Length: 300
Length: 288
Image (cartoon, rainbow over all chains, first blue to last red; front, side, top):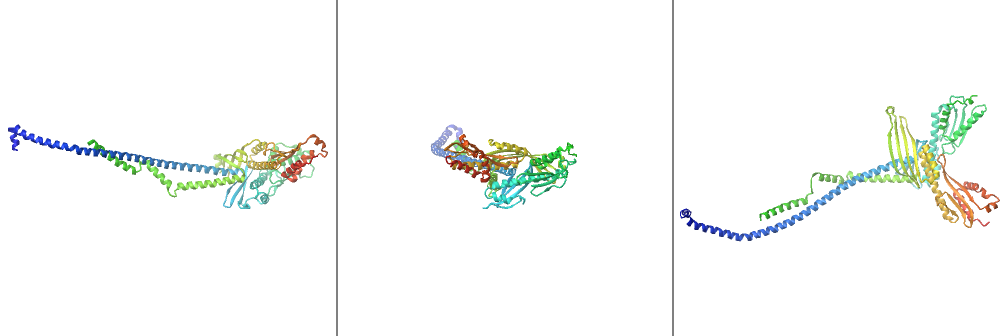
């Protein structure tokens, strides 16, 4: 302190020396420090440098790992998504296929023969039609055993099922079914004609239509003109061939006591040939159409 | 040194972050949740997803085997089918509880070697008591067209709108064609030198000759016809080709009456036995 104070008077000289000494002291310690520092600093620096180096390496390694990880997750994500879409599209296509197959199965009824598999074998359905009119269906339940058996069926009793199955069931089932088809369609057709005659052309019939259940023997008395003076004819139609809808035998006879005139005979013969060639109800439709013009020659 | 320290610190921070990222699944929100959801949906142990697929597949398999069965049962293979429905019910009809619907069907497939394409319209009228279904239009395209017998039959079926008759007759026609082919083939194999098939096994004619007696030939013409009612019947005829000298020698007029005798023989022996007897007669004919 004194020194400091005394410095101010002689100030600079005395302060100067001490100060100078102080300054030197500080300088030395600093330089000494500085002399020491680069060593540790250097050590520290190289240590740091190495550390950074390692950190960089580790970071790069981790970066690569993360990238890989991300990629694999992304891949599995897309796999899941595409699997999902694949599954959806697979389901869709399966559904579409199923609808398609179902539709074709339904379409088989238009061939006349359709059916489905059952636990025993199969149930076959035979459809019938006449002149485009879809009529009844019948079924045959088959048991797939050796020999093939009919478990039960809805075939009318007057159709010769036993005969047909004896001939074809074991050897050629297609032939069996199509033959049955023939018989059933022919029966349906004959029945249709007889029904139509009874319902639509009652006015032309002079008495009830006589028919058997197989509809292959029909007998009736009719007038070609319901209002007119024409004499009633008696018609007998026999369908010997059970697979046809047109008769094999036709007899048209006159029910009166007088002999027939030539025109009447012509008419009778014409009617006979008509019944041979045209379905029954169509014959009467043509009678109805002709009925517009009066046949004076029939008035006797 | 400071900058290096800073760099070191930054690297450390990055490394920590990267370490975290390696463990966690990545990125945000929606994608992840969607993925997670679909995983759940799909991989639920007995989840609907897989069950449906399994059921769907087995159901489809069952239906396909049923289709295969029908195809074998009928001999008719339907490959395509489509249907369009048009409701023609007027308000008047609805009041009377009458329903009128027009269906347009398209069907194609094959029966053995014959392919068909059908289009038809079905009119359905439903009233309180009954349902009536009528085929109002039918158009048929068939291939191959070489079977001339078929074209007439097709127009008749179209005219009559008789769909079932079409298929029935088609079946029987094909059955007869196959039988004829098999029979001709069998005879050709049994008597290779005597039997001559001009158009191969599918031809409608079979020639019988004796190679040691050129000039003589019996030709059997086997046609398969479909009549007005759709009935398929075989029609066989015999044609004779005989050298003039033989004709002159034929005092009993055997050659002349051959076609008629042939028909009689058919009635007695049936087709195969008749043909075989003819072949044998020409084949083993002693020199005359």
